[in-house]
Image (cartoon, rainbow, N blue to C red; front, side, top):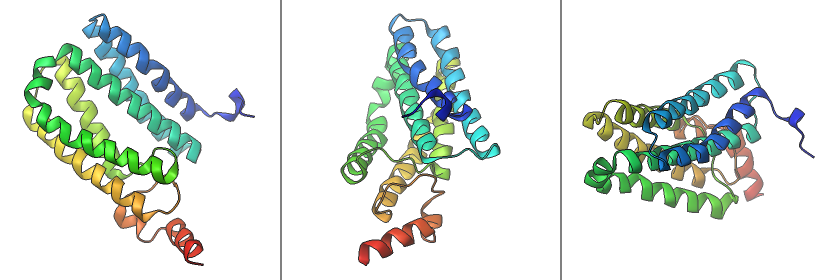
Length: 200
């Protein structure tokens, strides 16, 4: 049975983002833009902190990676709903471009759940880069207004990152966490071991 003692400090930062996401949505619903933006900044900051803590304290784990992924996804969803509330015209004018990575992401989730029974938690370098660019763009848009070159960069990186995630799902027969990217996956002992077991 899991107790509070089973969770480390990095896990609790992930829990913060998970619990903060619905609160952010409620704040956005009431139109409190400044409060929403600053609290969203706090959530994004905890994402960077928990990753650094997990690596520095050597407390990374599959459970922690999954909690981190859930927190990331809920924070991104809350941020997007905030943009719908506060920057609806920008979303309306650019929805065609936003739909491309969104549809790919939905496809990735469907494939992951059909194969693993849960979302991926690869945490590739591209995924981390994409998350940073998304956070910077969303916060900049909320604080100062749109920057279109940053928007284009976000869309392109999001597409490439999601395609890599889909590729990695087909590379790994079983769910794994902490994959740096496709190049590293080719010599990952976990993949080789799983492949050997499947062919045995």
